[in-house]
Image (cartoon, rainbow, N blue to C red; front, side, top):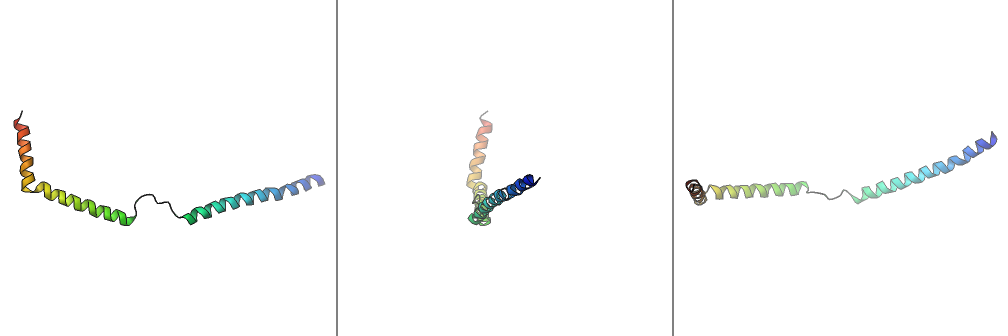
Length: 86
């Protein structure tokens, strides 16, 4: 029994050492990953705001152009030609 007890005790430090090394590697990986910061994938809030304002401005200009008398008359003319061509 004495030999079995000694072999179990001798194996424990190696197992603990492997676990500590594995944890140390994981900890170094997590620290490096945290220090590098988040990946830059996508737009930030300010970019969304600028994009939304630009889209609204484009929609307003397009609405004004389409509802103007010149474009409205041209569209009506195209529709009349298409309907009377049949």
